[in-house]
Length: 560
Image (cartoon, rainbow, N blue to C red):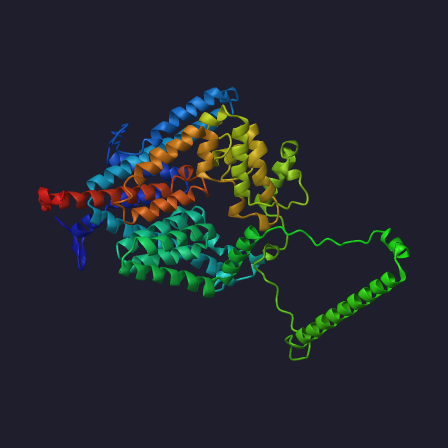
């Protein structure tokens, strides 16, 4: 017996989308580990299958996931990491993350294989609509708190929101806003190639609400690339619409973010110019006049006199220019000079200087480990490079000085990873039991010291560009050259070999190659599962279209 309501057909809606896939995505992308575990339990109970299909050739899922386990074990043995018992839970947590990633990608591949592309397409529409609704709720909640329609321009509450409002637009992940931004970027690319203007606008509008500057810059560069090389006329029109949404948001909703981005870019590109040197006259030069003849002294006096006149003339010209500028200054109604308000997008206007709990925790951690943190000793702190670039240099310098460790790395959680920061007990990337704090000495003197030196300071230093987070850095430092090669060849290469056939898969894989510089995405266990779903789907679509072509075109014409 089928229950039917006016306008509602259960059978139709049951097959409208892959609801199991949707539930899995919504649970697994959530930042909380218990939600991820529930997602895996749910999907394996409803689709019990452990045939992963790892092969050296034509492997079913990326061989990279299998290779990280022996590399991590060998690195831990070579570096004698297990001598410190506090390392065991760190190592176990790292392997658990990789295990969950394997379990997730296996189920995603199964669902793509068993479900038609049209059903997955509708499932992704529902997913991105739900994410947009959650993001809108985040924004409405902020509006309710501040009682202002535009929190991006709201300067009350010591600018708790204002330019930082996008950080609280987290979507279904309940994680960093950058996670939401990356997912929305995937959605924009996907719906551009699917020619779904409405859903493209939904994803683009959600993306701009996060105002994740580095993610947005990378996204815009890739958008420009596909506009020039890999899109049709109708798709180019959709890209223009996406750009207009971004421009309008910057101009009308949060112009401060545009100013901040310009300031960051200018400060990063600004060269250190040498100060003007003041030339001093040698005390012995005055005595040379006595050695000159009478005509020579007259000539020199005349030269000085003419130079003095030119200096006086130049000063008068400057004074006249200054008078013109003064006369051109705007005046108030009372005849006083109008002084414009300060540019409040600068960091010194973010708060009143009060100590936040997270910053205080970092300062307390510095006090505990003061002797082992050389960068934190530097006062005044005036870094010449962003922390992310300095972090990459630290990794390179350390591995050059320790060539044996460069092969398999220092071991999981020992130099550059989410678990390394978390296990330090400073409240970075989550809480950790105080009785089990673990900090590798190499991590302490490099990335940990670097992070504390930036993020314990004022707001102007606490920026994404100054943290050393990077997937490439993680694989090189903790899994060595073997780990980095495994990432490039057996993960990125696993998908990139199909690049000639990709449609939306090409900009998405370019996006992932870029965001690997910005965070530890494998440990996030969030956006990569969506990336893998879309890439598997694009491979399936192109393979299916190739098979249809081969079956409809005669063999002698197919190879003509």
